[in-house]
Length: 323
Image 1 (cartoon, rainbow, N blue to C red):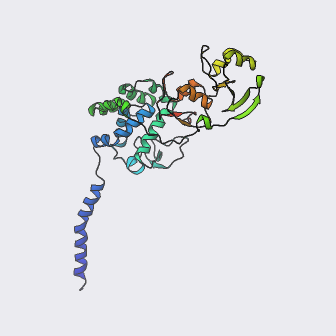
Image 2: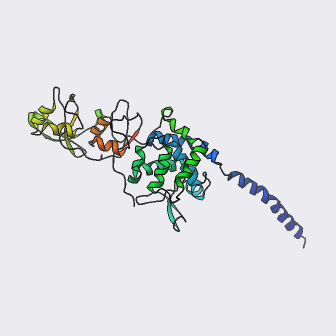
Image 3: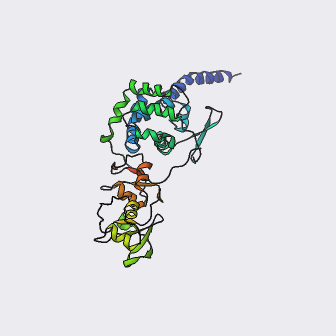
């Protein structure tokens, strides 16, 4: 009986401490407002726009809407801000949640930044979104309606919800920031500098021309004074084949040491990415990897004739098919 007061005191002490613990926990789980969410992730969205061409306003609006301003369970427990499901080919961590069906598989990321990066990959890799990259990056209404048309979400009012967020918070201003941002590339160099590259010798042709192999395609290095006619004559080919296989015009002049393919180049390279170096063009990058210039533009959602930016990451391979 003598110990009962101490027990009562202990209960009273615990009861008194519960509100303090609750207040402390709530302070660490304070929900973000939409304005706070936008301020927190706007730089990441702009960097994604510079690298992939997706309007920052669209990325921010989608992130805010899909994640409940970063407060949804999917965002808190899986850092998934865009509601992207696992789909075929996903080999990363995942989380099960009810959505259109019970226990659906959603991607799980190590950080919100990784989720934003994967969102850019997701849209740029899948064919059903390809038409969006033909729109101007300031056409946020076209992008919003296009996302709904392509089936990103089942909500029939999805496009209007995105547009409303963009216009209410003036997110379209971020679509004009491209020239003020420099993207720091996280991808490793895939292929060494040209001067350090070694090519496998395949054979020796007429006039002692050494034939090499790159990406499974035969090529030579042009000699001083070479033109399409000399090369075609040495290899018993038509003139037009030489300039066509090398994405050149028949009036182009060849330079000593220039890579000249004797076969049609492939649609993809043996490596996944290339980081653009100062002075590089889309044409010489296509030659470096033995891929067709048209395919290089297509894989990167770029208009033919446009120039790459120094530090830009270019896709060189086909993307994984959707489920």
